[in-house]
Image 1 (cartoon, rainbow, N blue to C red):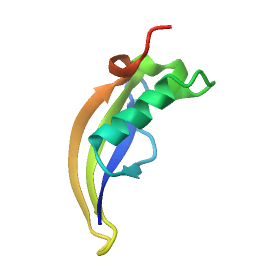
Image 2 (image 1 turned 30 degrees about the vertical axis):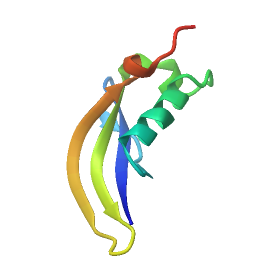
Image 3 (image 1 turned 90 degrees about the vertical axis):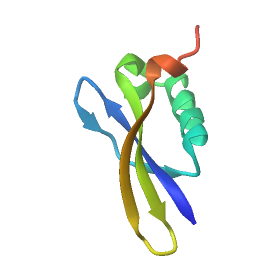
Length: 83
């Protein structure tokens, strides 16, 4: 089964956070949106204006092969809900 790899980039820090695997971009956007709007004391929630979601490529869970293809998905501003 092929899964897509994603990571959140902190634009101020200039680095990607640890990658995570999900089925597709829509699931990743939903997960990122939940983190941005969680109301918790996390960097993603507090500094959502600086956060960007990227697709990193694919991971094949059968062969272990990783295919890299870095692509911007959305920003924290795109998914932030009004308070």
